Length: 63
Image 1 (cartoon, rainbow, N blue to C red):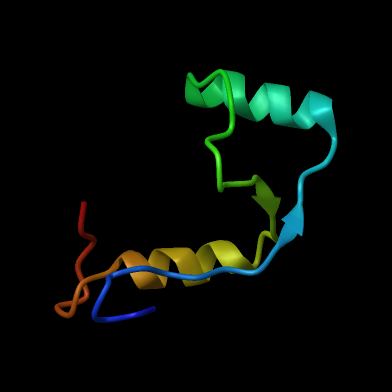
Image 2: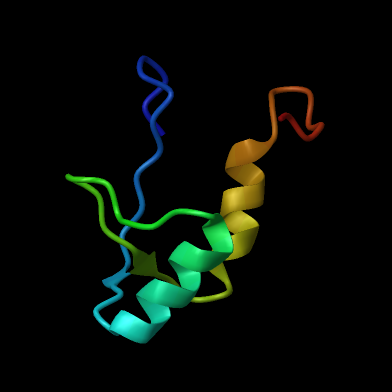
């Protein structure tokens, strides 16, 4: 995480399967992937890391 910009970075595999892309876009209510973005997949184990990044300094969930 970059503390100056509040951006987090993640490495993953590009989702190239068009049917998976369509399902994910439909679930999100979007009809396209914005320019400069891509869909990535990552292993389920990474979900704990995402929850940890979301916690604020007090340990409570933010947002």
